[in-house]
Image (tube, rainbow, N blue to C red; front, side, top):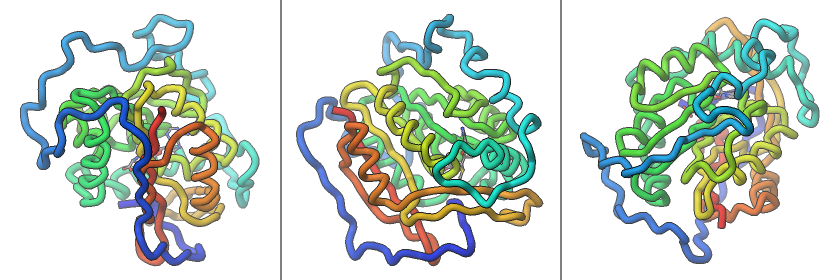
Length: 294
Ligand SMILES: C[S@@+](CC[C@H](N)C(=O)[O-])C[C@H]1O[C@@H](n2cnc3c(N)ncnc32)[C@H](O)[C@@H]1O
């Protein structure tokens, strides 16, 4: 289930999917067409896997140094009052609302056995663009279901990062073959060129907009040459909150520009958009992008 909001003006979906494939692929997947359902056991791992994540300037396996104390304690240390939302500012209070909101609604948002059909299609799109046994970063991974679960079942090595401790605790239990880190992605330093793929589904829309553009640049840095980003973004411009999201007793906050701005940000980050599709959800929707680092 995707993030749903009320009080938004819906933009009519584009008449047709605008899918573009340009240029050559530097890392053509050798397992086309992708298999679905995933094969079990998954394909053999690479003979010499590299670490997924290496904190810059620190021992590569000491993941605790990725996050400053403030981000580990984000929920309790920030003011709880919610501003209307400043799409252009760094809004710590809004970010705390997001983290506390997902702690509260984790299970309402996604059941342990949820299997939304759209994610199957997206896993296929991504896998078709990845090498075998790829290193994949799942930003805002939630409880790991379904994307990290799909990707590990397809034989990929997945590292998930999420600001909600509840989401991460569930992910560790639900997808034991993946690795997960609790923290704010905006405070995270990862080794450049570490990943074949990055999944970023319904995450950007929860960040203050300057951090969204910064994260898009960072994602390009974290990808290997030829690596791909699969992201859902806002389709229309909107910033706002709901006081009792999904009836879970907690607020939620979103902020996003329209799809044209995301196209500009991806292009400015030197990522080539290969797939660009409006995803309708009730009266509104999001935009799905597959973009490649050349
Ligand atoms: C709408 S949910 C999507 C979860 C998952 N990507 C999916 O599509 O099923 C957004 C997730 O992003 C996480 N998130 C929001 N802001 C974050 C941040 N600054 N750093 C890391 N994770 C964040 C939330 O805790 C939540 O689990």
